Figure: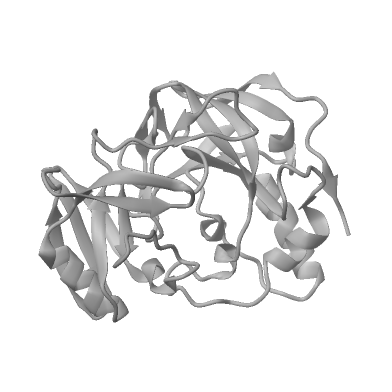
Length: 282
């Protein structure tokens, strides 16, 4: 097995940036979901509420971000100093985040037609994810769950076979917004993996990823494309464990050993959960 692609999302909810290599640190890949768009009340936004985030490209630079979107002029946003801060809400967490400049707020507000702000998770911003899956809270970025999301090519192929059997078009891996894609021919093997070594890093696979409506959205336009892949996941991959309520694709992971990972790196299974994970099929 090998790593076939790596992806980071500089601002939560925006388009993926594909990477040949990436550095994994405690909160996840460097530059991954360290920026966040919030509304006037400081509440986080995602494609669930603001689908047009999918049309924004955010490219990391040495000292900030370069934003681009159809119909808008490109904008450079300097990494904020952190002197101006606000408390933002993401799920059940309150995080003190550094506020970007007024031009960034104006650019986003004009695009969405409402008052929005851009904030940054700097070294002073602390967020940890506690859950039934871990013994202790895990430091995390502005990601929904855990620092890293792992998916496999074999599982996507099996899902697309099910989608095709019901007369719909296949979906690309981008719909699931993974960080790491592993080339594994046999589907759903990730249910049996407990920890992995990928290049110079090690990951603990903590919990399966419960999927919301975002995988139904085109990741270039934000447009909802129909019921797939959620309809087929409901038939194939409904959780049988009450701790994970919903349909599952991919696994949330946390760093065990930090370091660099590159496309083409080998993948080694360090530890397994032989019992797999409880799945209900329709």
